[in-house]
Length: 268
Image (cartoon, rainbow, N blue to C red; front, top):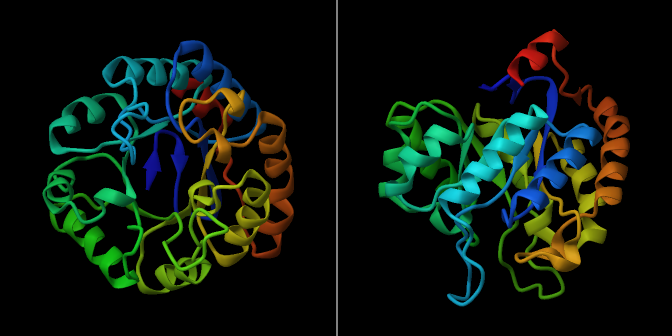
């Protein structure tokens, strides 16, 4: 499938990166500049945030979406952001290139049915305790509605382990690739909750056959209003992007690159 000029699910490996939450124009522009310079293909940023605590930062909402869209335009990057309810779809569809369904909404069937009527790509995260079959059946709700542009995202599952935020199920990546035709993206940020583990798990995901990554990057993680503890610094993200090609080469893949660079310039 195509996301702007970017092809997802082909031989090229796609990296989506940016802050967990949009906090302001300066922060997002800085993050977009960093990830674009390092070679990322899509800018991520949350404007509606499903937080465990009702007292935590809930996102900037519509103003944040305009900030994210402007950063994407300025740096030539398509954008991805989470939609939490059906009422938000018109706004999100008009401004984003990929609509993300978070883990907590994987089985929000009314939302999935509504996204089946959308004509933009949807990234569907696996639920915290969802089986692989439940994950694929959730995707079927969107596909059955007529939207064939669905990508799956493995973001870690809840197990008995307490040292990590979640447990990254890499076997699920290979399984989903064998059982479906859908691209599979891995989110090592939520899967581990630890910046020191994001690099090795990203490389492992590439080796396991993933089609891309969804990674949190923040200019100053220690000042982040959401999930700063699991965000990569610009320096760590640059290191990750330098390390990926060697692993991808071993499995006959490569970082996505445009066939015609002028196409990307026009898209910007």
